[in-house]
Length: 132
Image: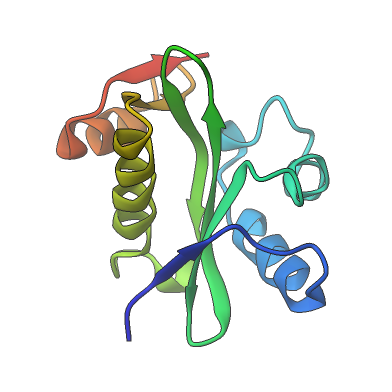
């Protein structure tokens, strides 16, 4: 069964539970400017900026997708620790790339300066890396 990428509904209480589990596993450097994962979710759930990967009725990964005029930016990409290295992040990146391409916009990955993991991810997917 494939990972389905969607914009999670705030009306589904299980989505909130799953998103909290995802961002509870986030490294500290990933969360700013938000104080914590709960603040990130509260600020973005229901806005259309939050993308999530669903497998077997559970959200396993999520990211923010900013649709700007010059380019689209994917940030705060996180996958639950117990499901990492199983293609969830790749599926989120692939879908964000597809959506940006259909809109005629380049996709950039956004991460704090100096984060080697984010630099490697951007390089593997051929994405420009914007630092904040």
